[in-house]
Length: 371
Image (cartoon, rainbow, N blue to C red; front, side, top):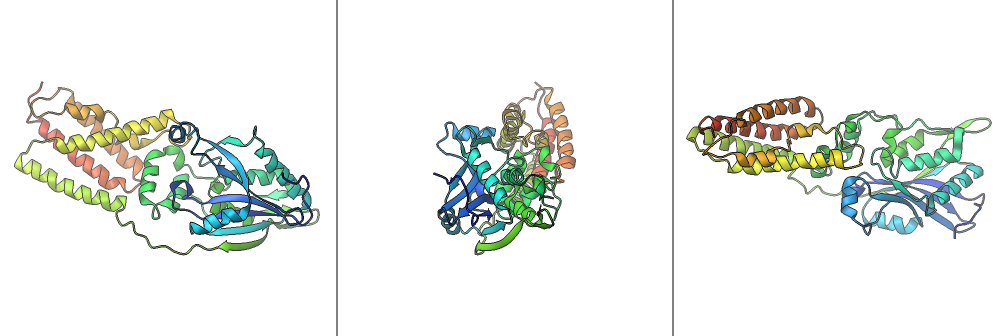
């Protein structure tokens, strides 16, 4: 049972954990640790807890309705787990008054009550880091000066790229496809604290007002564990894969045109993948509650109607409307080029592949009798 009143020797710290190998831990983690040596209190509060035993787990995860909760555990067992995963761990002890520590403790304990502990997780706007800043504000009131993260200005997508583009390029590519235009909004200094490292820097910049002066929020910083660098074994990045594929498709397309080979097998495979990707974007856009997967203009090139239209291509007959469909899709590809290359250069070889095959399809239709 948690002690109702903290002793004067109690301390409060922000614990910041570096990125891990799993996708859900790629951006790090934050926790608030309250330690009271007098009452043997050791409670590290985390808002990043979810359960794999949750009913319809994957459906809820994909739809953005998976419930997250606040949980509490002693710090050291968690620390040893993070250390075993080779994730850096940093402690920032906070310069709070006994009254503010008590308020923060009571706020967190109130959040732990069964009727309060569950919340609707939003990766950019309401997560394990942003909730800690909210808790601190609740405990300190107008005594806290919290400018947020002001060292850099980036969009939410650019912040994701900073953590995933080189470390997990395939995951970054997938996330770039999944998130829509809300991710291209520039994060405010306070919104940028959705990342644990940024929250840590923001705490360093924050101040606490007293009756006579202003003092730093962070009293002391300790590196509890520093991760050792690991070798990068992933050489097959999306950039290498799709540029290699684009070169091969280019040679094959030129050969087909030169040799007048009429065959749509490659196109049926390619545009089936494109169409299914488009239907996934539609599902994320209209069928989820993530808040950042709407208005996704990747749908301009990943056009869902390719499934089933691609299966209507035949070397024996062509529908009258098929040429018009290719013209419309060509316009969509040009629109995609202007809108999407600003944030995802991996799309360049993908768009080149699609343009080459649309040219081949259009060129081939001239040799097929109209149905």
